[in-house]
Length: 230
Image (cartoon, rainbow, N blue to C red; front, top):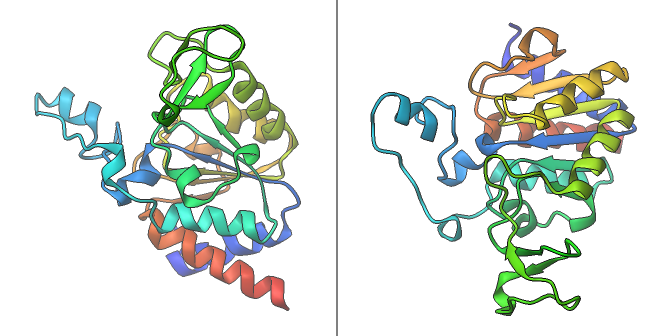
């Protein structure tokens, strides 16, 4: 594998050339904020398989990290077309991502969803009945529950249109979300994977990073900004 600096240069160049960049995040992007992931070396499921107690932390006790902020910077310089996230921790919205650019496939711990019209509202409002009369329940998707249809449709739509698909902190094992990079590849996109563990798509990606996200994405975005000034 080429040196990290060479791969960062290549990533920055690809982001510069991209006309339709889609980013896909998993729990791995939030580990540098102090939240555990699932399949990482010290992840929730990894520890469970070893018979060890799982480490948990309230989502409200952590803040967005440099990886989250780098994605916001991609938004602010007009490079991010869409962000797909498997995370429920609300860190993308707290970091400054515009809601219309974000699909939260597994919901958000700070939001409720109407069972009738599917509208989302903030938990902080303290209401349990929607304007339409439907009951408001947690927006977080549990195992076996269907994903929010609009978020799912939007995610596949943008995946099919992108020319660069960046996986940031996901092991790509949860379906149907793990079909999105496959859709991007079929439509001719370059695939970049940043994850500190193997993924089923490693052999098909064009650029691979196993380093910490904070060591890759922020410097790549800084280099991209330099390229855009030339």
